Amino acid sequence: QKEVEQNSGPLSVPEGAIASLNCTYSDRGSQSFFWYRQYSGKSPELIMSIYSNGDKEDGRFTAQLNKASQYVSLLIRDSQPSDSATYLCAVMPPSGGSYIPTFGRGTSLIVHP
Amino acid sequence: GAVVSQHPSRVICKSGTSVKIECRSLDFQATTMFWYRQFPKQSLMLMATSNEGSKATYEQGVEKDKFLINHASLTLSTLTVTSAHPEDSSFYICSARRGEVNGYTFGSGTRLTVV
Image 1 (cartoon, one colour):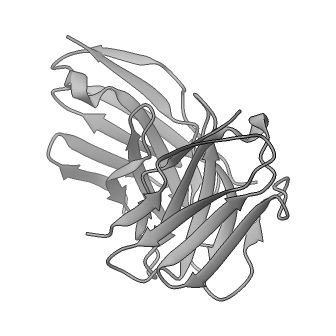
Image 2: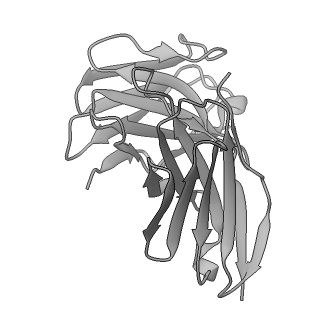
């Protein structure tokens, strides 16, 4: 059974610090990885996608992928109180599969002033 | 970018009635749409996969006769919660796939409260 694991948190960091969110997955053949942000009472919004090993940066966000170790992480630099939300990791199955992403349970991030 | 519109955003209904939720892809054709349910402080739970022109594929444990899904066109999928009960109260969210592997966009969600 495909699994995506995230620490539920909450992860509490001071404003301006780096927040590090981690996700591990069980399906070694997974090809595509996504990070979504979900504010309370709202639907998820895509903030990062990554497909190759290494780092991908977009503004204050950096996604890191290590397929050998089966983990993907999200770094948020200069964290702001507005970053306080639940961050969901989503993993796509290998090509030729169902194209249905598996979501982790999410990590709650709290950025305090 | 891809926009998915979901209506209504919030609905309160009486127990025993039915509620229809619409999910529209506004600027692309969605061959596949997904319906999720999320209880407070819980993860997204996939309910069913909706394919244009064919029957929906329901996840294990989801009653197909209670949660009716229709995907009559490439831009519209509907979820009807029939004979709603208070335990059906939840946040329902649709997601659309553009046709290539990585284009998933979520609707804004529908907060259903059954009283």
